[in-house]
Amino acid sequence: MSEHVLPVRTYLLVFVALTVMTVVTWWVAFIDFGALNDVIALGIACFKAVLVILWFMHVKFSTRLTWAFVAAGFFWLAILLALTAGDYASRDWEYNPQSWEAQPAVSSSPGHDERPH
Image (tube, rainbow, N blue to C red; front, side, top):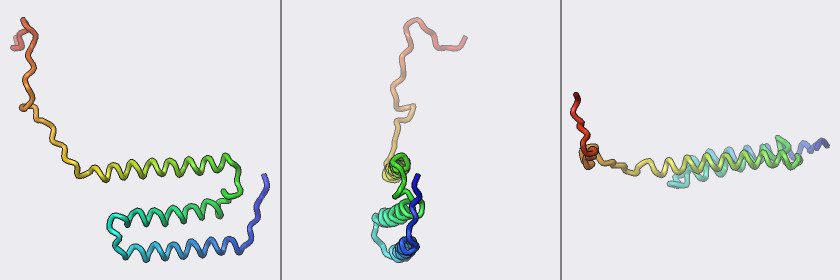
């Protein structure tokens, strides 16, 4: 496996980008985007995570197997976010099951006495 040595300038640029995006995250937190607040925050967080994964964890120069595991991690994150969004969207749905009294009585089979002996 070959080692990739990156210049210090690359690490500093990624660090500056992460710092700028952290300030953008703080700035966006004070603006009301309505339902898009969470989407924007997650988008910025995912962008920052990709920077860290590609450059600081050296995935950019890794094998295809490493890329497959990174992709599987993001796929799993997408599944979790979709399930969470589905749960959140359905929280105010009203569920009114019929009560036991409203259901028709079940007739017993002929010749069967339901009285206790």
